[in-house]
Image 1 (cartoon, rainbow, N blue to C red):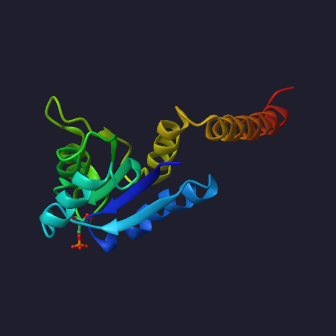
Image 2 (tube, rainbow, N blue to C red; image 1 turned 90 degrees about the vertical axis):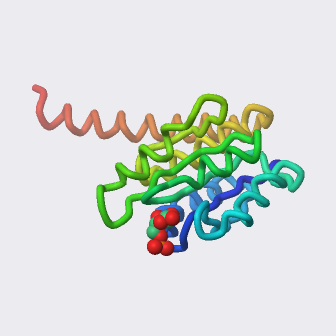
Length: 164
Ligand code: RP5
């Protein structure tokens, strides 16, 4: 199976990124985690992206806050799918990172998830790998079914409480 790369702009992003790590682990998807910054370590970030395909990666997840150029900078160096997680930093509630991550110029796409949406970033990465992996697709289907049953059980509890 191809690996997923999780790159974060700073180790201060780790509390958000942890949910992506946990999600990938729960599906048994191999991954690596690195701290590379588009601004502080641009050469290392570019080198990672440039060699990611030949190093066995299938998807790159990039998490960054503030002027969040990391996902775009990685996407500029690879045709692997890049998923951006805008991270909330000290000011602006993550709107700065959301806009910086999502507003990519035509030709260099970044699939941007919600602010701090690390679990969905991992799920999207798994869905991409599942295009060519039937057992992963089955695991995703089972998880959706379980989630559905949980919501329906909650619906029943609410209905029983309010509806005569
Ligand atoms: C971004 O700046 C990082 O991704 C992080 O979200 C933010 C703040 O970084 P630190 O100053 O905490 O290292 O590049």
